[in-house]
Image (cartoon, rainbow, N blue to C red; front, side, top):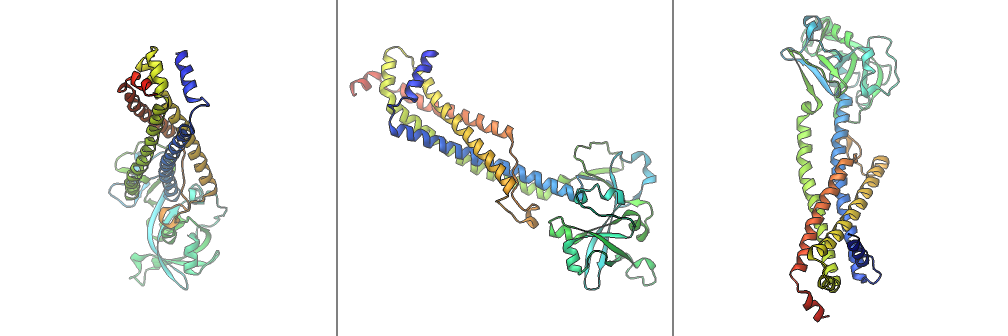
Length: 383
Protein backbone atom coordinates (compact mmCIF):
# COMPACT_ATOMS: atom_id res chain seq x y z
CA UNK A 1 0.00 0.00 0.00
CA UNK A 2 2.85 2.37 0.85
CA UNK A 3 4.49 1.58 -2.48
CA UNK A 4 1.24 2.32 -4.31
CA UNK A 5 0.86 5.67 -2.52
CA UNK A 6 4.47 6.48 -3.42
CA UNK A 7 3.74 5.79 -7.09
CA UNK A 8 0.59 7.93 -7.01
CA UNK A 9 2.54 10.81 -5.51
CA UNK A 10 5.26 10.52 -8.14
CA UNK A 11 2.80 10.27 -11.02
CA UNK A 12 0.34 12.99 -10.05
CA UNK A 13 2.45 15.56 -8.32
CA UNK A 14 5.63 15.33 -10.31
CA UNK A 15 6.95 18.63 -11.63
CA UNK A 16 7.82 16.84 -14.87
CA UNK A 17 4.11 16.41 -15.74
CA UNK A 18 3.18 18.23 -18.92
CA UNK A 19 1.37 21.56 -18.89
CA UNK A 20 -1.49 19.91 -20.81
CA UNK A 21 -1.94 17.37 -18.03
CA UNK A 22 -1.99 20.08 -15.34
CA UNK A 23 -4.40 22.34 -17.25
CA UNK A 24 -6.72 19.40 -17.96
CA UNK A 25 -6.83 18.53 -14.28
CA UNK A 26 -7.58 22.15 -13.42
CA UNK A 27 -10.37 22.37 -16.01
CA UNK A 28 -11.79 19.07 -14.76
CA UNK A 29 -11.91 20.35 -11.17
CA UNK A 30 -13.51 23.63 -12.26
CA UNK A 31 -16.14 21.97 -14.46
CA UNK A 32 -17.03 19.50 -11.71
CA UNK A 33 -17.23 22.23 -9.07
CA UNK A 34 -19.46 24.44 -11.25
CA UNK A 35 -21.70 21.48 -12.12
CA UNK A 36 -22.09 20.46 -8.48
CA UNK A 37 -22.54 24.10 -7.39
CA UNK A 38 -25.29 24.74 -9.96
CA UNK A 39 -27.16 21.56 -9.01
CA UNK A 40 -26.91 22.30 -5.28
CA UNK A 41 -28.08 25.88 -5.82
CA UNK A 42 -31.11 24.64 -7.77
CA UNK A 43 -31.97 22.11 -5.05
CA UNK A 44 -31.57 24.82 -2.39
CA UNK A 45 -33.74 27.22 -4.39
CA UNK A 46 -36.57 24.70 -4.74
CA UNK A 47 -36.43 23.76 -1.05
CA UNK A 48 -36.11 27.39 0.04
CA UNK A 49 -38.98 28.56 -2.15
CA UNK A 50 -41.30 25.82 -0.94
CA UNK A 51 -40.42 26.52 2.72
CA UNK A 52 -40.86 30.28 2.26
CA UNK A 53 -44.25 29.88 0.55
CA UNK A 54 -45.39 27.45 3.27
CA UNK A 55 -44.30 29.89 5.99
CA UNK A 56 -45.90 32.84 4.22
CA UNK A 57 -49.24 31.07 3.86
CA UNK A 58 -49.04 29.86 7.47
CA UNK A 59 -48.40 33.44 8.60
CA UNK A 60 -51.53 34.61 6.84
CA UNK A 61 -54.02 31.83 7.58
CA UNK A 62 -52.35 29.61 10.17
CA UNK A 63 -50.79 26.21 9.49
CA UNK A 64 -54.15 24.43 9.67
CA UNK A 65 -57.83 24.92 10.48
CA UNK A 66 -60.23 22.61 12.31
CA UNK A 67 -63.77 22.76 10.95
CA UNK A 68 -67.08 20.96 11.18
CA UNK A 69 -67.83 18.34 8.54
CA UNK A 70 -71.47 19.36 8.03
CA UNK A 71 -71.90 22.90 9.40
CA UNK A 72 -70.25 26.15 8.36
CA UNK A 73 -70.88 27.52 11.85
CA UNK A 74 -71.55 25.75 15.12
CA UNK A 75 -71.87 26.39 18.83
CA UNK A 76 -68.98 25.18 20.97
CA UNK A 77 -71.30 24.03 23.78
CA UNK A 78 -72.74 21.37 21.50
CA UNK A 79 -69.41 19.62 21.14
CA UNK A 80 -67.68 19.88 24.52
CA UNK A 81 -66.03 16.48 24.18
CA UNK A 82 -64.71 17.19 20.67
CA UNK A 83 -63.13 20.60 21.26
CA UNK A 84 -59.36 20.61 20.52
CA UNK A 85 -57.02 21.39 23.40
CA UNK A 86 -55.25 24.17 21.55
CA UNK A 87 -56.39 26.50 18.81
CA UNK A 88 -57.65 30.01 18.12
CA UNK A 89 -61.41 30.40 17.67
CA UNK A 90 -62.44 32.24 14.52
CA UNK A 91 -65.53 33.17 12.58
CA UNK A 92 -65.46 33.87 8.85
CA UNK A 93 -68.13 35.93 7.07
CA UNK A 94 -68.55 37.65 3.72
CA UNK A 95 -69.50 41.31 3.65
CA UNK A 96 -69.42 44.60 1.77
CA UNK A 97 -67.01 47.23 3.05
CA UNK A 98 -68.07 50.75 2.10
CA UNK A 99 -66.45 54.15 2.54
CA UNK A 100 -67.60 57.50 1.20
CA UNK A 101 -65.74 56.95 -2.08
CA UNK A 102 -65.64 53.22 -2.78
CA UNK A 103 -66.95 49.73 -2.01
CA UNK A 104 -65.14 46.40 -1.74
CA UNK A 105 -66.25 42.79 -1.26
CA UNK A 106 -64.32 41.41 1.71
CA UNK A 107 -63.95 38.42 4.00
CA UNK A 108 -64.45 39.31 7.65
CA UNK A 109 -62.16 37.33 9.97
CA UNK A 110 -63.39 37.45 13.55
CA UNK A 111 -60.95 36.75 16.41
CA UNK A 112 -60.86 37.55 20.10
CA UNK A 113 -58.62 40.57 20.66
CA UNK A 114 -56.23 38.53 22.83
CA UNK A 115 -55.85 35.91 20.06
CA UNK A 116 -55.33 38.42 17.27
CA UNK A 117 -51.83 39.25 18.52
CA UNK A 118 -50.85 35.56 18.27
CA UNK A 119 -51.30 35.52 14.50
CA UNK A 120 -47.93 35.92 12.77
CA UNK A 121 -49.28 38.60 10.47
CA UNK A 122 -49.65 40.94 13.48
CA UNK A 123 -47.01 39.53 15.82
CA UNK A 124 -44.50 42.32 15.24
CA UNK A 125 -47.06 45.11 14.98
CA UNK A 126 -47.69 47.49 17.86
CA UNK A 127 -51.33 48.51 18.23
CA UNK A 128 -53.92 48.63 21.00
CA UNK A 129 -57.49 47.34 20.81
CA UNK A 130 -59.35 48.80 23.79
CA UNK A 131 -62.87 48.65 22.32
CA UNK A 132 -64.62 45.91 20.39
CA UNK A 133 -65.79 48.05 17.46
CA UNK A 134 -62.44 47.99 15.70
CA UNK A 135 -61.51 47.11 12.14
CA UNK A 136 -58.11 46.07 10.77
CA UNK A 137 -57.61 46.41 7.03
CA UNK A 138 -54.61 46.41 4.72
CA UNK A 139 -52.77 49.49 3.54
CA UNK A 140 -53.68 48.80 -0.08
CA UNK A 141 -57.38 48.46 0.80
CA UNK A 142 -57.24 51.68 2.80
CA UNK A 143 -55.79 53.39 -0.25
CA UNK A 144 -58.54 51.99 -2.49
CA UNK A 145 -61.26 53.13 -0.08
CA UNK A 146 -59.49 56.48 0.55
CA UNK A 147 -59.55 56.02 4.33
CA UNK A 148 -56.96 56.28 7.10
CA UNK A 149 -56.46 55.29 10.73
CA UNK A 150 -59.32 56.52 12.92
CA UNK A 151 -61.86 56.69 10.10
CA UNK A 152 -65.09 54.77 10.34
CA UNK A 153 -66.36 52.60 7.49
CA UNK A 154 -69.64 50.77 7.01
CA UNK A 155 -69.90 46.98 7.01
CA UNK A 156 -72.93 45.61 5.12
CA UNK A 157 -74.40 42.16 5.63
CA UNK A 158 -75.22 40.91 2.08
CA UNK A 159 -77.97 38.62 3.40
CA UNK A 160 -79.93 41.59 4.78
CA UNK A 161 -79.52 44.15 1.99
CA UNK A 162 -82.99 43.42 0.59
CA UNK A 163 -84.65 44.00 3.97
CA UNK A 164 -84.83 47.74 4.45
CA UNK A 165 -86.44 47.44 7.86
CA UNK A 166 -83.68 45.20 9.23
CA UNK A 167 -81.45 47.04 11.69
CA UNK A 168 -78.62 44.57 11.09
CA UNK A 169 -78.11 45.64 7.49
CA UNK A 170 -74.95 47.55 8.37
CA UNK A 171 -72.73 48.70 11.20
CA UNK A 172 -69.87 51.19 11.55
CA UNK A 173 -66.40 50.13 12.66
CA UNK A 174 -63.32 52.23 13.31
CA UNK A 175 -60.02 51.48 11.53
CA UNK A 176 -57.46 50.80 14.27
CA UNK A 177 -54.58 49.28 12.32
CA UNK A 178 -53.25 48.86 8.77
CA UNK A 179 -51.38 45.70 7.84
CA UNK A 180 -49.32 44.74 4.81
CA UNK A 181 -48.85 41.07 3.87
CA UNK A 182 -47.21 41.87 0.53
CA UNK A 183 -49.81 39.85 -1.39
CA UNK A 184 -52.23 42.16 -3.16
CA UNK A 185 -55.11 39.68 -3.63
CA UNK A 186 -55.05 38.76 0.04
CA UNK A 187 -54.78 42.35 1.23
CA UNK A 188 -57.77 43.47 -0.85
CA UNK A 189 -60.01 40.73 0.46
CA UNK A 190 -59.24 40.06 4.13
CA UNK A 191 -60.16 42.33 7.05
CA UNK A 192 -60.12 41.53 10.77
CA UNK A 193 -62.72 42.35 13.42
CA UNK A 194 -63.59 41.39 16.98
CA UNK A 195 -65.17 37.93 17.25
CA UNK A 196 -67.98 39.03 19.58
CA UNK A 197 -68.78 42.06 17.44
CA UNK A 198 -69.00 39.89 14.33
CA UNK A 199 -71.24 37.33 16.08
CA UNK A 200 -73.61 40.06 17.23
CA UNK A 201 -73.80 41.73 13.81
CA UNK A 202 -74.58 38.46 12.00
CA UNK A 203 -76.85 37.26 14.81
CA UNK A 204 -74.86 34.04 15.33
CA UNK A 205 -74.28 34.30 19.08
CA UNK A 206 -71.55 31.95 20.40
CA UNK A 207 -71.07 30.37 16.99
CA UNK A 208 -67.69 29.98 15.30
CA UNK A 209 -66.37 28.62 11.99
CA UNK A 210 -63.62 26.60 13.64
CA UNK A 211 -60.20 26.80 15.20
CA UNK A 212 -56.92 28.05 13.78
CA UNK A 213 -53.69 26.18 14.54
CA UNK A 214 -50.47 28.16 14.14
CA UNK A 215 -47.90 25.47 14.91
CA UNK A 216 -47.14 22.62 12.49
CA UNK A 217 -45.73 20.62 15.41
CA UNK A 218 -49.00 20.80 17.33
CA UNK A 219 -50.28 17.30 16.57
CA UNK A 220 -53.58 16.47 18.20
CA UNK A 221 -56.39 13.98 17.75
CA UNK A 222 -59.37 15.46 15.92
CA UNK A 223 -62.65 13.80 16.88
CA UNK A 224 -65.79 13.36 14.77
CA UNK A 225 -67.53 15.44 13.44
CA UNK A 226 -64.50 17.71 12.97
CA UNK A 227 -61.67 17.51 10.47
CA UNK A 228 -58.34 19.29 10.03
CA UNK A 229 -57.01 20.76 6.80
CA UNK A 230 -53.43 22.02 6.68
CA UNK A 231 -51.78 24.57 4.43
CA UNK A 232 -50.63 21.93 1.92
CA UNK A 233 -54.16 20.61 1.49
CA UNK A 234 -55.72 24.06 1.43
CA UNK A 235 -53.38 25.20 -1.34
CA UNK A 236 -52.93 21.83 -3.04
CA UNK A 237 -52.89 23.31 -6.56
CA UNK A 238 -50.05 25.65 -5.66
CA UNK A 239 -47.87 22.92 -4.15
CA UNK A 240 -48.68 20.57 -7.04
CA UNK A 241 -47.40 23.30 -9.37
CA UNK A 242 -44.18 23.60 -7.32
CA UNK A 243 -43.65 19.82 -7.48
CA UNK A 244 -44.37 19.81 -11.21
CA UNK A 245 -41.66 22.42 -11.79
CA UNK A 246 -39.22 20.73 -9.43
CA UNK A 247 -38.42 17.58 -11.40
CA UNK A 248 -37.78 19.06 -14.88
CA UNK A 249 -35.44 21.65 -13.36
CA UNK A 250 -33.66 18.99 -11.33
CA UNK A 251 -33.34 16.76 -14.42
CA UNK A 252 -31.88 19.52 -16.61
CA UNK A 253 -29.25 20.56 -14.08
CA UNK A 254 -28.43 16.93 -13.34
CA UNK A 255 -27.65 16.48 -17.04
CA UNK A 256 -25.40 19.54 -16.92
CA UNK A 257 -23.56 18.04 -13.96
CA UNK A 258 -23.20 14.66 -15.67
CA UNK A 259 -21.73 16.34 -18.76
CA UNK A 260 -18.97 17.75 -16.54
CA UNK A 261 -17.92 14.17 -15.81
CA UNK A 262 -16.89 13.75 -19.42
CA UNK A 263 -14.16 16.25 -18.63
CA UNK A 264 -13.05 13.83 -15.96
CA UNK A 265 -12.91 11.06 -18.56
CA UNK A 266 -10.75 13.27 -20.78
CA UNK A 267 -8.41 13.94 -17.88
CA UNK A 268 -8.04 10.23 -17.20
CA UNK A 269 -7.35 9.53 -20.87
CA UNK A 270 -4.63 12.20 -20.89
CA UNK A 271 -3.19 10.61 -17.76
CA UNK A 272 -3.13 7.28 -19.59
CA UNK A 273 -1.47 8.70 -22.72
CA UNK A 274 1.15 10.61 -20.74
CA UNK A 275 2.00 7.89 -18.25
CA UNK A 276 1.49 4.74 -20.32
CA UNK A 277 5.27 4.28 -20.70
CA UNK A 278 5.67 4.44 -16.92
CA UNK A 279 2.77 2.05 -16.44
CA UNK A 280 4.27 -0.40 -18.93
CA UNK A 281 7.60 -0.48 -17.09
CA UNK A 282 5.82 -0.96 -13.75
CA UNK A 283 3.77 -3.76 -15.28
CA UNK A 284 6.85 -5.55 -16.62
CA UNK A 285 8.52 -5.26 -13.19
CA UNK A 286 5.58 -7.05 -11.61
CA UNK A 287 2.99 -4.38 -10.76
CA UNK A 288 -0.39 -6.00 -11.43
CA UNK A 289 -3.11 -4.55 -13.63
CA UNK A 290 -5.37 -4.24 -10.59
CA UNK A 291 -2.78 -2.08 -8.82
CA UNK A 292 -2.46 0.14 -11.89
CA UNK A 293 -6.25 0.36 -12.04
CA UNK A 294 -6.20 1.68 -8.48
CA UNK A 295 -4.04 4.55 -9.70
CA UNK A 296 -6.74 5.53 -12.20
CA UNK A 297 -9.40 5.17 -9.54
CA UNK A 298 -7.44 7.37 -7.13
CA UNK A 299 -6.95 10.03 -9.80
CA UNK A 300 -10.66 10.01 -10.58
CA UNK A 301 -11.82 10.07 -6.95
CA UNK A 302 -9.29 12.72 -5.98
CA UNK A 303 -10.37 15.11 -8.76
CA UNK A 304 -14.06 14.44 -8.11
CA UNK A 305 -13.81 14.91 -4.36
CA UNK A 306 -11.85 18.13 -4.77
CA UNK A 307 -14.22 19.48 -7.42
CA UNK A 308 -17.33 18.46 -5.44
CA UNK A 309 -16.11 20.08 -2.23
CA UNK A 310 -15.24 23.30 -4.06
CA UNK A 311 -18.69 23.21 -5.71
CA UNK A 312 -20.45 22.77 -2.36
CA UNK A 313 -18.43 25.67 -0.89
CA UNK A 314 -19.29 27.88 -3.89
CA UNK A 315 -22.99 27.03 -3.56
CA UNK A 316 -22.92 27.63 0.21
CA UNK A 317 -21.55 31.16 -0.14
CA UNK A 318 -23.86 31.88 -3.10
CA UNK A 319 -26.87 30.84 -1.01
CA UNK A 320 -25.58 32.84 1.96
CA UNK A 321 -25.18 36.00 -0.14
CA UNK A 322 -28.57 35.53 -1.86
CA UNK A 323 -30.44 35.18 1.43
CA UNK A 324 -28.62 38.20 2.87
CA UNK A 325 -28.49 40.61 -0.09
CA UNK A 326 -31.51 39.24 -2.06
CA UNK A 327 -29.95 40.13 -5.41
CA UNK A 328 -32.30 37.70 -7.26
CA UNK A 329 -35.72 39.30 -6.86
CA UNK A 330 -39.11 37.95 -7.97
CA UNK A 331 -42.65 39.35 -8.07
CA UNK A 332 -44.13 38.99 -4.59
CA UNK A 333 -47.70 39.33 -5.82
CA UNK A 334 -47.21 36.19 -7.95
CA UNK A 335 -44.77 34.08 -5.92
CA UNK A 336 -45.71 35.23 -2.37
CA UNK A 337 -42.11 36.32 -1.65
CA UNK A 338 -40.14 39.26 -3.09
CA UNK A 339 -36.85 37.41 -3.55
CA UNK A 340 -35.71 33.89 -4.35
CA UNK A 341 -35.14 32.21 -0.97
CA UNK A 342 -32.58 29.42 -0.72
CA UNK A 343 -32.16 26.75 1.91
CA UNK A 344 -28.76 25.06 2.18
CA UNK A 345 -29.11 21.39 3.07
CA UNK A 346 -26.09 19.54 4.43
CA UNK A 347 -27.67 16.15 3.73
CA UNK A 348 -28.27 17.05 0.06
CA UNK A 349 -24.65 18.21 -0.18
CA UNK A 350 -23.46 14.90 1.21
CA UNK A 351 -25.64 13.05 -1.30
CA UNK A 352 -24.21 15.07 -4.17
CA UNK A 353 -20.64 14.31 -3.11
CA UNK A 354 -21.46 10.60 -2.68
CA UNK A 355 -23.16 10.29 -6.07
CA UNK A 356 -20.28 12.18 -7.69
CA UNK A 357 -17.80 9.75 -6.17
CA UNK A 358 -19.86 6.86 -7.55
CA UNK A 359 -19.79 8.37 -11.05
CA UNK A 360 -16.06 8.98 -10.76
CA UNK A 361 -15.53 5.33 -9.82
CA UNK A 362 -17.45 4.22 -12.92
CA UNK A 363 -15.49 6.57 -15.22
CA UNK A 364 -12.19 5.45 -13.69
CA UNK A 365 -13.05 1.82 -14.40
CA UNK A 366 -13.69 2.75 -18.04
CA UNK A 367 -10.28 4.42 -18.27
CA UNK A 368 -8.53 1.58 -16.45
CA UNK A 369 -9.98 -0.90 -18.92
CA UNK A 370 -7.94 0.79 -21.67
CA UNK A 371 -4.68 -0.38 -20.08
CA UNK A 372 -5.77 -4.02 -20.11
CA UNK A 373 -6.06 -3.84 -23.91
CA UNK A 374 -2.45 -2.74 -24.52
CA UNK A 375 0.71 -4.83 -24.65
CA UNK A 376 3.43 -3.22 -22.47
CA UNK A 377 6.29 -4.51 -24.66
CA UNK A 378 4.82 -2.73 -27.70
CA UNK A 379 4.73 0.57 -25.77
CA UNK A 380 8.38 0.17 -24.80
CA UNK A 381 9.44 -0.65 -28.39
CA UNK A 382 7.75 2.44 -29.78
CA UNK A 383 9.23 4.77 -27.16
